[in-house]
Image (cartoon, rainbow, N blue to C red; front, side, top):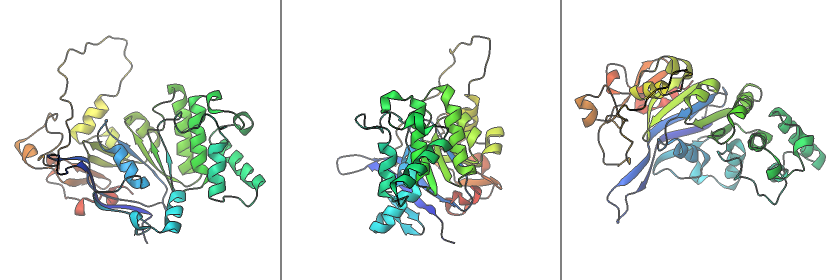
Length: 336
């Protein structure tokens, strides 16, 4: 069966032209398959500059890969004809980070729902389209009579973001790419929006790629997880064992940094970890070597391969060199 969406040896770099000494790697070579026949939520976690948003933009067709291919139902998305591109745009929807910037303040919020409904002809009559819009709003916990007819400034950030979830749901896509969808809303509303996202998969059968820097929310809603550091996937697989028993030193650092409630004040006089530097394409060795407490000589010489330490876990670390490597570095086998 042809995969719905597949990244095949995809790599993204910027720069490296005649006037620049070297290229900056935004995403190191990556292969994975998203099979929508079994709807799941896959979280992509990492700090700023790790490559999360680059991965999202590649999957949405908003940027082209420097190397490799992004395939939609077996076809390179850069070579789709007009009909194929239109179907791709309907099947793969996006929810972006900023619930404020996606609205035109001169239009009522109805506009962001009625335009895609009309452009993709989701209904044969206007009344039917209005009914589907109302159903989509109710599915994300909003009351149409309180939302429709208002301007963006009359609604809260949480309401505006849930309207964008409803907009994506309206087209009944196969995949939604959500890039930091709760990072700019109040903490009190995050649980509601995350529940709406989880409902898209459980009730409507829509797969979700959830991009976030927040490991706690990734654990809360996702089935699988990719942990990224400086353009590389360092650990991937089923979310439960990775969060409960992290094996890569960077994943351990991430989990150790999650705040825990304490009545004691703590001092931050300890030595800070080195900051991540630009991902020079000519650099060698493990990207995490300068921060890793378990660094070895080989880590500075050679970049680690992806090793399959368990049935549903892959780790890019020399500590796992005795485990079998993933064929061609393809993560599809552990994201099932």
